Length: 202
Ligand code: MG
Image: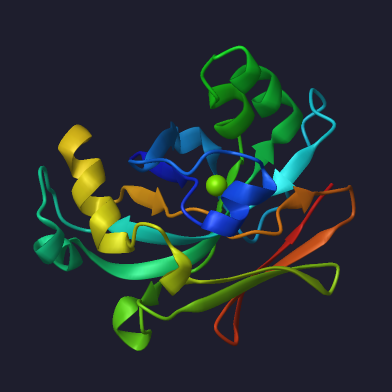
């Protein structure tokens, strides 16, 4: 199983990190060891002082595919969830400035939180609201319509490079509002009005 993540897929988040709007989707991966169930606690690694939350819609692939046409992409997933792409921003900034790969900052153990799975049929994927609360305050709010590349376009693009296998996950990018987590924070994710997870930070 692999976790494919999309960077810079919401324009207001691109602005807040002062990145350039990409011409093609920005992709990176996390290994299966990065996966964390949302019922577990997240422990801030000792090698970073600046771990950020990034709430994201997550899609689970349930059919093998390569070079998938966008118009057929909807056949390759039936469930969605909400997750957190934890990011060691200090290390990522350092690696980016040196032109080095991001993996240590993005793909470390427990950096990919995934909530429970929901049938996509129960939601309007073109107009899907989601949010993240930190200690009860809403810090991130997004809608799938704000994505520069929608889910089906992402599946099509990704599958040109990487064969998608059953069980692979796609993190589809984060809206604006990312920020640092501190020990004892509680991070609650909502898909529409439904609470998807409550993750304790230690
Ligand atoms: Mg992200």
